[in-house]
Length: 394
Image (cartoon, rainbow, N blue to C red; front, side, top):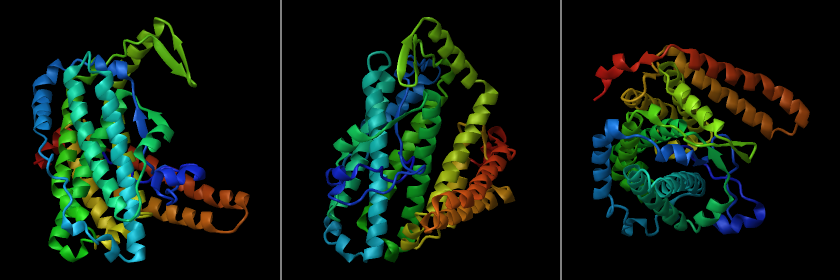
């Protein structure tokens, strides 16, 4: 699961518990979130309309094709010492963020598998298998961090990370996209390094071909889940939480049912599809061409070309399940994303300056407004109807 790639900030007195003293990367909007959802709604999902496909995917999970894949070999011995200091720092940041992101997926899937097991055993089993995969990925990444004398205390991170609530519908959208975009990111890096072995800075990348198949299977699961008539998701809950306080009344059950009805209207589905696609693509583009650009340079990749390839492929794949996708081929699409990257660079330079805090805020405001304007124009860009886009899908 690849929602974001940066570590959360932990209180300084606890840093050594997390990673042997390395200061964690600052938490930003690009950081991974640890998620929770409406477990009652999930356990009451009616899967009958697409149960056969979900059962077939679960059987794939049971086979656990990669159970013997994540085994370290002699190539890891001394590989960390071969990296120059700058490349080492860049790569450790990549490992740190990726490990946190995979672990975030593990926690969500594991909790879902436990909470819904009694009423929805098929769904629970699928989530349990995906939690197994995510834990395996996180552990393998954490072991690579130990090659650099660092390691994340994942148990401590679990207890000290804030959890963000997403309703099931949003979880489906976000996790489907994170898994599919993870597939295209990993396979693109693997194919590039296969052609350019001199750019393979660490043996971890040898594992990306099989690794990305886990991401692809997870994405296929959420594809099937969204096709399992998601309008049947009803909270059946008489509880509602406001400002951290929980209230109970029978009327709240009707509120939840009405909310899920609205969320599954065709127009609502189209609007949410555009929102999540844009949110994921814009976040990745801004991050990779900004704070992560040097990482891709170290692999011999052009971050802009790489991101545009991944976005185009993920957008194409998403047409299998979303009613509409973004028109990424419109000449203004990447131009506006580039403008956001340019604005972010200026904002970063302003933040680093020694000017008065109030003055810096006024200097930043036009760039924030410009970013908001670019995102709004991208969202309002006429989307592509997925039915017309299907011939492009292989």
